[in-house]
Structure formats: structure tokens, C-alpha cells
Length: 190
Length: 190
Image (cartoon, rainbow over the protein chains, first blue to last red):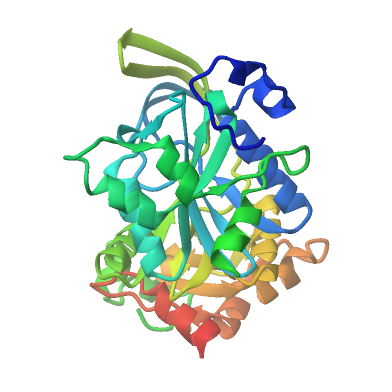
């Protein structure tokens, strides 16, 4: 996926990259990528399970539990963490259908606080922001994120242009599908 | 909690430590301990949510989801991970009601593999094993764990005596309740 300079034109959808055509499903892409990293012993990174509050469980038989009532809880941390080249790594991944900006309401306050705490403790923290319709995903630094997050009285989103100019584009391909560790290496190891 | 040399005698239950009297609930103890570590900015360590497979969700109203059918999944990784003094840290915590040994059937194969992968990638990996009735918790190394895990044709448990002689006793107290990072420091940082 290359960088596209005319995000508002319809022709964008017709330009051919296999990645863009099948549509961006960020979570799937990250899951197969993380599996690739594990299989090839590059990194050990997992998506955390979704936090669920279980209210009622039914036992139709010994050792068999069926959850009959439960609710989704707000996550207090991020979706992904793990280890890469001896370093602790932690990130949140979000996608947007907007082609012009990333709305900050997509991130909750706990997640920003968590990522800042990780950075403070010597870990690698960032966000992956994907623009579905452009077929582009970026590794966004905490510096950029904090700057816009703390100025939400001014504007409630980060412009696409700003993200593009100040973040690493994540190269997508066949294997691994979304090689975000390449961007991590360039940003945090060089 | 001190070291008790007569685990089979009933008098053990009468010896007074507030910790033993209220009973050991390892998960609660670790949760309040991790909260303490976060509040005092010592480390950022969380318990991962329990993995649940959601089958049926009901929406009684917009933005309200009630899970009506779901099942517990076998975890592929460990329960706890995070960052401490710039290092990635990963562990599993288990308790047993046995006073003489820790049954290896309490650990699943994926968890051992995961912990070994973490160690290989430069992280800190271990297990916390708690003997409920003795009111003792130990930080057990992968070396000891692997030795017994790989010889299950010989015996299917690790003797209490072996754990006690080869592991760090985790000091319990008021704040933090179960100071396992003290044991981590002694084992991995000195």
C-alpha cells in the first residue's frame, strides 16, 4: 500500500492493491501477524481477551459451564502487549472509516494513561491507527497522541495529514500481513 | 508468614498469622498487590481477562449488549504480565490445597511453552505457587518447573520440600499484601 495523495477522490477505491481491495480488518491482520511473529520466533505478542463480567453460570453437567448472563466491560488497559528483542511492548489498535481524520473519542482515557505509564517505565508504547478506506495503517507515537489528546477543547480528532506526515506507515504484505515491528525497529531501536 | 517445618501437624492451623487465618486467596492478593505497585509507580502489571467465547448476544436497546450464551476457553498464555524496571515480566499463579506437593495437572502445556518463550526472548518468567493451608507462596523458577514438568512419567507433582528448598518465599504483609517483586529483584536483578 503506497501513500495516496487524493483521499477524497473516488478513483482511490479503484487503484489496485490486494490489501485495499479485500478491505482492512485491522484485528484479523494483527492476529495473523502476531502468529507469524511467534511461529518465526521474532516476538511474543498477544491480543488480550475482551473483559467480560459474568453474572450467571449454568452447569448442565459436572465440568461443563455455560455462561447465561454476562456483560462487556470497559477495558482498563490496551488490547496488545508482549516482548520484542527483550523489550516490553504495548499498544492499542484502532481503525476509522474516515478518510480525513482520526476521531479521538475512539480512545478511552485509561488507555492513554496506561500507554504513558508504560513509556515511563521503559517500555515501548504506541498506537496503530488504520484508515480502512485508504488501506493505510500508521504507527503513531505517544508524543503525537498526547499532543492532540490533551487539546480536545481545540479539536476532537487528529487530521489524516498530520498522522501521515508524523508517523511510520506500516508496510502490508503477504507474510507478515502487517509488519508493524519493522516500524517499531526503525522508531525505537535505531 | 514464616517457614513452617511440620506441614503435616494440625498445630500448623493454630499458629497465628493474620495472613493464614483469613485464608489464602491468591488471585485477590495478587490483584491488590498489583494495584499497590501501580499506584506507587513501582510496576505496571495486570491480570489478563479470562478468555470467553461469546456465542449469543442480545441487544435490548441500542448500545446495550447482554451476552446470553458463552463458554470459558482454555487460556493460551499466562494470567499476568507487565513491566518492572524496564523488563518484561510474565507469570502464572496457582494455589493448591495439598500440604505435601504441587500437582502438575494444574498447569497446562501452553502455559509452560509460553513462559519458556518469554525467557528465551529476554523476559522474566516464573510461577507463583501458593500452598493455601500452609499460608505460603513461592516464586518458582522455570528451571525447577521444567525439570519436573518434563519428567511426569516419573512423578506428577513437585514435592513441597523441593519447592521450599529451591524457591524464594514471597513475604506477605499489609502493604503490599504479597510482595513478589521483592523476590523478583533478588532472583533476577542482583
